Length: 421
Image 1 (cartoon, helix red, strand yellow):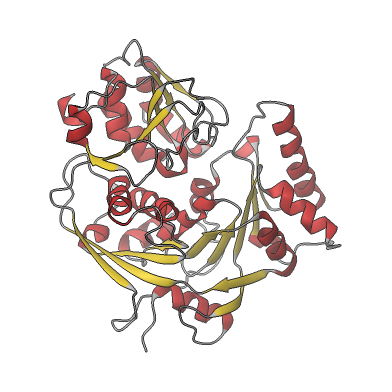
Image 2 (spheres, one colour):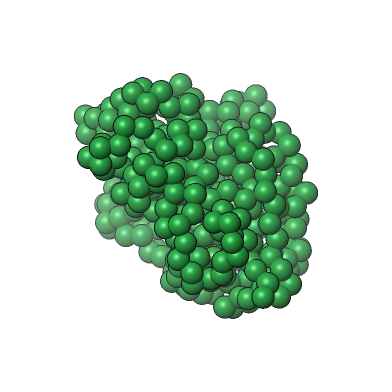
């Protein structure tokens, strides 16, 4: 019987053919920790009596949620991670000196790649599936087990094949593809399953769009999102010094899928996820007709903080001004992206328009800092979640959108179609 790409990755790692539903003990190529969840992992690691990491070069510690520290509690959280990094002389340790949101920083540095098994104590670890890897989020104690042993237990997930076909309309991006899918199947429509994305739309989708697509697989309940390596992936990887030799896997024609979902995107509008679930998607035209005023626009996060996001925002905001009653916050996902945007002139445009550009951080996305919403405020954001209280007050409301829609909305103060700017 044929295998899916996810089944093949696990088969290679465990040394025998395995299929969906089997429970396997697999080696892990990269474990990713951050400043919020890793202190719990470190405590479990030290209480176990372990003295060293099983695979030091396969562990990356990224301080990205509350850096620079916003208060004493976050400073102490970071302190635990710093001291562990120094004690174990971690090669892949990133703080203020080399900042970035973990799911943008690791691909940028070539630390994750095709065929890898990757875990992180962060649900959006599934982002890295855009590189043809199996990548998933786990709990902090699961992370500690991986740190100690170099592996972990997995139930090989069943796969859903999602076939996107057709040419994307202007101002429609990878973010809209995943919001449309979640609208169709719901927030638990792929529970503990692999979402395998393919079709001619994906074949023409850039890497930034693919990262956004896989990033939000978890919002449909999926264990992982994954896209097979092609020429676009190879071009992205060619610019990196990879930590490991890429291992390319492709699903067999007779691979077994629990479901095949076909989505024709040729008439797809930008999708706006209304409060307070990512599955509450509506066409942009509906949101425009609803005349939704926004207090805050946020462009950033591990979903949409890449260079293309800053570029499209700058192109829309050039020689324009953020609405008087609206504030615009932009967070580049890494320092490298920040520098590239600055060199291209995007940062000047965004600031001149009235935007605030922050250092790379997850802060605003999770209601941590630098972008908290007050009582009753409304935000349109390029983030991945719009749950009640996600970005601040429980009475606030969050609409999810792509970066072009967000930028256009900053100018008018209402959810706006970029083509109308």
